[in-house]
Image (cartoon, rainbow, N blue to C red; front, side, top):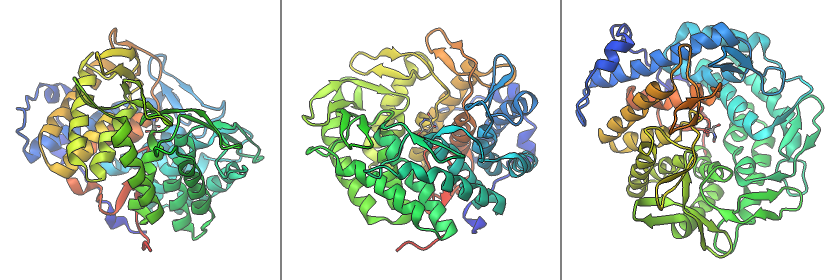
Length: 463
Ligand code: DMJ
């Protein structure tokens, strides 16, 4: 365990005493950011984390999620898997919230059990729970977290027992029974970072092998143009939907090709990423009158099908930045910012040819902020700090409730819904915090974030 790889930053105690009202009144001149300004912004984010976390503790302790309007709770599968406590833990550690992290860890260590007769979604449980347990183990050295991760990994393994090696969608954590043959590239290909890290930390190669075989199975079924579709039958390997894009259902398949290369030095993943990004830049990238976007195309013909782009797609500037294509990354993030500003907060999907909203919800998603974080990290250009401040201020303005934060059903009316997904703690607030925190809070030369923003530290040698 190499705890030095991540430097936990305690924000100045003086900074933490600044009230929210004072902070909001702070007038930050565009492009002018001192270290103290950044620390103050990081502290504002930290205070908002505490605002929501304290209410999770008060109203939903031990359950998967807080209901931010009714002040109740919600368990995904009827029984709690401590989704929010696991997803939120490494954010607390990175923010230096020692007491909260200790209390949370105690809850997980003593109460979390995967020996439950429930069918869970392999993709969600992998990115939130397996990813969260592994990153928190690396940050804290708490071996119980690694034991929980190994137990969970073993219970998820039956998903790979299909004729193609691509995973079934659901698995029963107690019996190992599987179901769900209609899947997509994201659910099949967003497993290698977590399962691979589990292999590295336990010395058991089986997790890496199975998750990699699944990703390769998607890649091997790409079209002659090098594109993948939106839905696939994991038993037959036949595509069920030829729509190709970087949108939800495909998004993190690409993310994991790139990041698995970076984290594990896996040359196959590098080759798969290189071929994929070439195809995406040829068929998905769209120089529209409103800017650079990545739209939808038919995977077999390359013909443009939809000029849609959305909140999930907004992870893509981050991938471009991480791969070294800072020019396209910056242009696409500028387009995302336009999407955000159509209604003052980001809709789920727009039609970028006329900037009309296609799907109006905002479930507190992080991707646009995640990309902003990478752009600032790689360029140091303060305009990304300005942009992040807009994201944060609008989030506070439109989504904050008396006890926490709530999703919006419609970004135009700003009507709230009774939902606060765990990724708000794991990702949205983490990326906002890291945007302003000292740059070595997470050392990106040695750590890779999984798609739920859990940093995996390369504590092993790559071959
Ligand atoms: C998160 O669970 C992950 O970021 C996933 O890759 C996509 N959806 C949510 C956030 O929007």
